[in-house]
Length: 235
Image 1 (tube, helix red, strand yellow):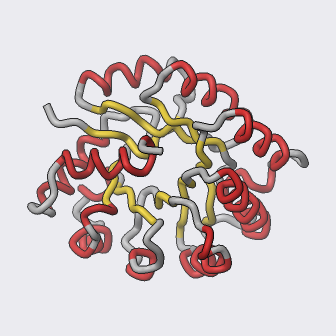
Image 2 (cartoon, helix red, strand yellow):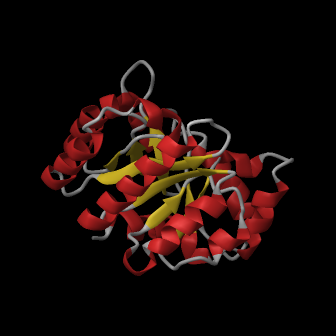
């Protein structure tokens, strides 16, 4: 059985995440990176990660929720990162399909600064906002942490931007009308490729894996597994 790591998943709206992870684990998904979208997720994710060494927890505020963040969110997040040295940052970023962009930028920049301060991997959401994201990242280029671009959309200038960026392909890679993403996969350095479900159900990761392995005959499941281990688990 091939082994995988889900580089971007979420808490279920109802039910037990551990049950979903156990089912995925039986199918070869050996570990996962569990992302918050809002402050009320943070402690639950920390608890799950502390109870399961194969779950990496990420705390952050999704761009869609940036304008509803509490006044003390950054202080609280900083405290939790300091107290929990294995917790990463995510899901954070920018999304120009939403009308709260000024709030998104404030939250993203502060989240990036916390990731740098505590040397944590950052799980990045970017939709129609690469110009703004890369402009911000350029300001911190000498000190960037490892950044995983989740649900990568195939933007070439992102691929070329910095060695600390890694790119996670979602099940969208298997859809027939997502040609830009498929073209990007052909140009992606093999050591930068990760996989994700972007779901509370980790099983769709296998759909992404099948599509990637068909498109890139020079890459194996072991290569992708080792890429993800190197980003999230090896120091």
